Length: 425
Picture 1: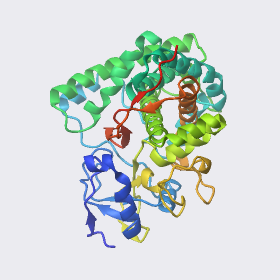
Picture 2: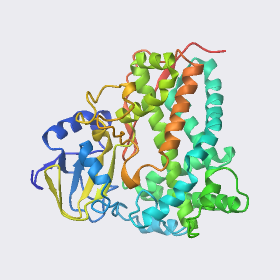
Picture 3: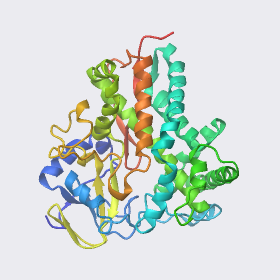
Picture 4: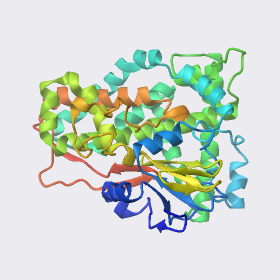
């Protein structure tokens, strides 16, 4: 294939939201790394990129993510904000590099500080509190006999769980959720200027709220993420700056709430659409952990990630010029039949592991492997267990067929999940 052979590809289209898998299966067979027709000025690709290439195989994706010196994060800011929006954001904290967009050597420093706060031990200590939040919510829903599981359960549970973990008081949870939703208007092109400006002003308020939270936890630490982050130190005593703390927590909340909400919703759809899978978990609750992994492989919400070619390189038989944007498709790699035989089948005992023993890439791979993956797995597992224990006859409404949408770039999730069950006393 030459660089002149562009493939019509719009990851934001309704068609790709409905079914990305058929397209990726075709491309994997015919041209596993292809040049895309998508514009290089679309959000999440490098500002100065002239071409965009898409990677669809597990092997090639692993190569890209494990060689950050060849495929760094690059400059993925998208088109510059209008002056009016920039003026509003200038009233807040200076933009700090976050984990997602960082490259070496700064990435190692940033990740070590954040990872030291988000430890398996801290997650384990919080597990009873996540379980209690799930129990309270299920007890509220059980007598009703019906619910829309995305909004009524998955969204509410994951928002409560992550904000409790961050250290945000319950009375402020809805404010944080509202502020987080404004990111789309500010940082993604296409919104009216006044909407962008107004959203930018509120994001500055969001930043000041988090700044106050960190200062309070600096003086009065608790067992929460804000306290752990503000007191995190490297071996030589380095600490996160206030802009790094605030921008970093904004990013961690967006991923820890949004992606986990969507992950649970997608997995619930898989299990209830083929209800024998739900019955399997009722018969063997110890398999829930395995179902989470296989569900994330089969229908993880994060669709792709962008990188930048630091040099001319050949990948999957395609020559990629230096400076090009490289989109690695998680959803395509996770259904690569070379690594996952019968890739479109949900097999609980597969546990999301490939034939070579490699794990699915729903949480990424390499130095940018999701820092909150352990949290996400734990929260999704608890969310499933609470429903299995309290509402075992949970089922989708008769005749329902899930429709998918893109609530944010890169993210694919079921829109609604209307469910019914026998009302529980």
